[in-house]
Length: 93
Image 1 (tube, rainbow, N blue to C red):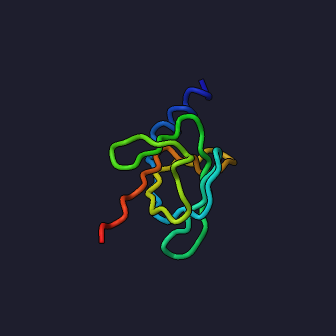
Image 2 (image 1 turned 30 degrees about the horizontal axis):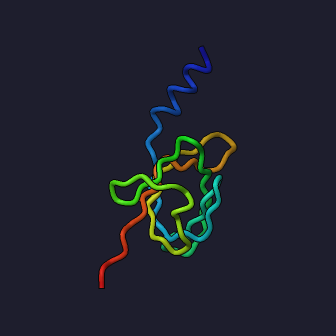
């Protein structure tokens, strides 16, 4: 019963949005630099969706400096878990 309530509480927790530039990325983690200059780490797992526009991409397609928005949730005693990572298109000159 307690596990079911804990799972329900996690499911109802709203996602937090983070904007920034990719500072570093691996298959299991992404670090962004937010507009205030702080580095924020996120865990990437098998459920994380990576998008460029409407196209799904792989973690290998992320490059240092890419502008991204990350929707994330926090799990107890763990990193922020990236649910969706959206890469913003660079402005055309």
